[in-house]
Amino acid sequence: VQLVESGGGSMQAGGSLRLSCAASGLPYSSNCMAWFRQTPGKEREGVAAIGDDGSTKYGDFVKGRFTISLDNAKNTLYLQMNSLKPEDTGMYYCAADASCSADFAYWGRGTQVTV
Image (cartoon, rainbow, N blue to C red; front, side, top):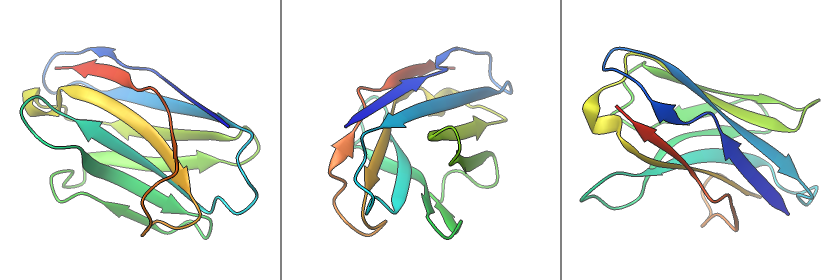
């Protein structure tokens, strides 16, 4: 199993970034993919998740600024982040598992976002 994130970088406040997560080797039962982040001084938190039925959920702090999407043909997960704030700075991780309610079994190594 490989989850490889990309698209992080430095951006001014108010700007946008799109993160990508290329997935390979995932079990057929991996019905949920998600983005998490680790920001300085805080515990890892869920950013957004998407189920195989297309349902999505977001962390309260997102407040309409981020959009998660999944391109099944490309086996790639995306996170469009708009109106970035300095407090969005952190390492962003892609994860996958059979359920969005589970402890995620598969993780990428992360991509750094600095605002």
